[in-house]
Image (cartoon, rainbow, N blue to C red; front, side, top):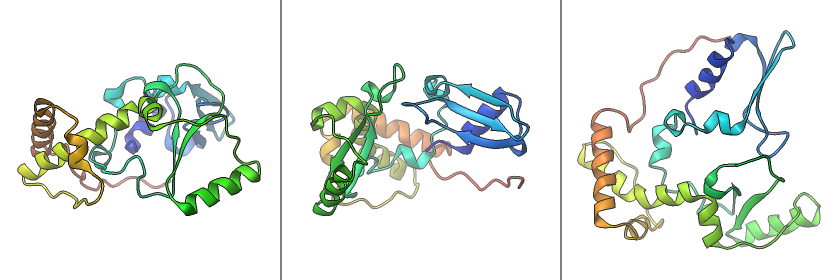
Length: 205
């Protein structure tokens, strides 16, 4: 999840204030569809999904997302993802998503959605392919164990995580990779960049 300042940057791009908005849509009306803004006086502004997210340094991802131990939804009955190579769209595409059904309850819901026509199954996939489609999630999952260790070394509170095989994922990295992730997290935590930010008052509209 990106910080709200990401949305505020988009408004600044068009010289708009929050109180002028009638609609702010991150995506949709396509796959992924444009980021669309509509104002109360009837004006509309659009940028493409790629334009919105092309600069990873400006994603404004919340710190908690960088240490999330279950971004891929292992504890969910059903997990759904975009189905783009490397996690990003090259062009507007047909509406495809990756779906992982993990439980009996999830399978019942999945089958009911297919039977009702809410879902149309194109083909079966596998974990290797989904790993390519969501490669940034693979990298993060392999990094979380070392990042949490780095935060702990910096004296910061870390979540207690069980049954998510974080150490096993980290073991797929080289010792140098884990050391780099741990040191990076330690240093960011010490600088206050890997923790919950202080509350900031915002004007209400």
